[in-house]
Length: 308
Image (cartoon, rainbow, N blue to C red):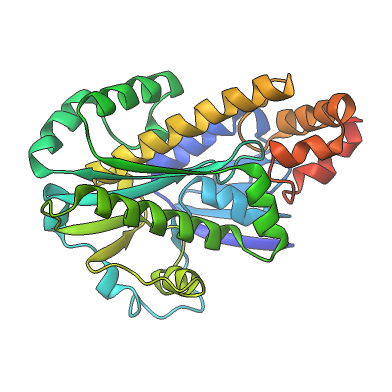
């Protein structure tokens, strides 16, 4: 059984407990909660450690930005020091990028990079722009419209399910797909803003920076100068938070389109509710229909068969 251990703030753990309300099971001693999904058993402890165990623990961990991985088998921060953003970046002219849809069975992966000038930071904060995980979907959609009204430069990429499944069958990991999406979104945006002042680029970290650079190098791409990585970056950088809101809005819109196209309401996430929806798609449209609306390699595809 695969497993991952990550460290989160108590605030995030409480959000996780609320998110997994319908999947909660008996809580072991010393834990805050335990939940069971088709992909993993999630156990959160008072120490801040969260254990993901099961068929696809990485998918559940990715939903929460993977936290801070426990230090086993790793040297203390030696490799990532040059990628740590300076504190001044958060109040400077910078690009931030984030993604949505990575842990959801249905729907694409969306990645957005946003360029925020320092004079826009207070206004965006006043509007309520912050970590999209702390916002409801209706508020996210409303904020996205406000961001567009302000003409904040951004680049949005959508990796639709058919292409996602083709890349996965070619041997691309989801990590490589995300790295390439972030890289191209950032590259497109730097071209769009031209000679505008740019003090740095911040990527919401989903893997170690050296792995990210290795992923893009396999496609003959290289990291741009002054690119930094940070877990939970959307909590610190208004540019990453802006990208997060744009990416999430795009994901929600794409889910609406897919639900209309398939003729079945496709739920978000990867819960038992999702398994039942998969079975409905299989019965009414045939299993091949999943290729255009789902990440078919997720364990949910197999789990759903018991509902047929």
